[in-house]
Image (cartoon, rainbow, N blue to C red; front, side):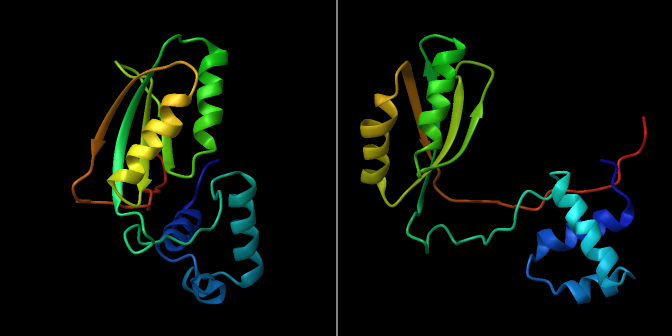
Length: 158
């Protein structure tokens, strides 16, 4: 979907504050409410807006430990990879999972209440998944930079 300047401004504003009043945002864009809502609905239908969430403070919510876990699997077969991905999707500790190139097949971002909780996740869940061959865990000492806002802009034609 090609975005125009109004779409970009809507997306930027909603990423900054999803609770912004529609009437205020529409007015700032020079739109009445009906065209504003139509644009937002179209952005949702086309999958650019995937949902509306509330971001929590990870530490205050009881999960101060962040770890990045690299996982290698025995065979690179589709059924084995699919099985791993289905298992990972059910673990509440896994915030993100990426299929990777390089030495390891997957990179996970995992949260835990403490180091013992991280150990339980690795030993009682991750190592039990069929085909897991190697696990390398790095624990984050401190978050230096974090953002959730994508740099939405109008793309120039090639």
